[in-house]
Length: 200
Image 1: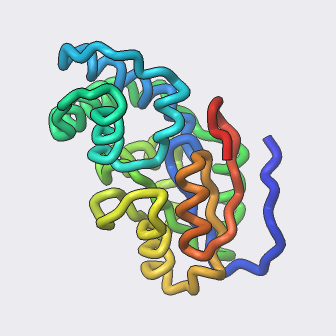
Image 2: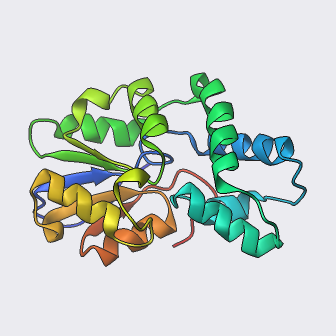
Image 3: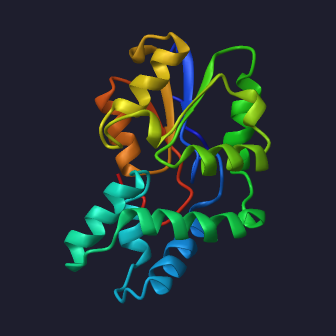
């Protein structure tokens, strides 16, 4: 994987977690499939649909699914079961090594944030598993902002916590909605191509 770093200079790096730093998207997908089976919901959550919604908070994810399939799934139930199945499979998660290597090479040179549409519990656990939890200066998750990706809120919050002008931040993202959010925040972005259907 080659990361195309745009021309700077940059005063901070902001990384998405799932699919960018952590090779966890397939694990999340399987957890969703098990969750919907557990809840007795029958529809075809294809990889294309799933990856098309990558990066959005759980309540928005479920809201989109409900509209798409004319269902009335409760997002809190989905969150509870999906997190359970995800935690049970945490040992399957590994790093996206080129991105983790870049992050670690940046420590001490630029402030670093992780901005993820996931929950604090899942994201913080994932960062520990891939060995970068102690390397970041700020963590922003879905609980910290009102609007999820593709709204810019999560990246603007990260820049605020780092005390850096948003226009001087570079975002690393695997998902189209995350890239849109970075651009909406006035930031440049690097597309990390780690999974199928991540078309921009």
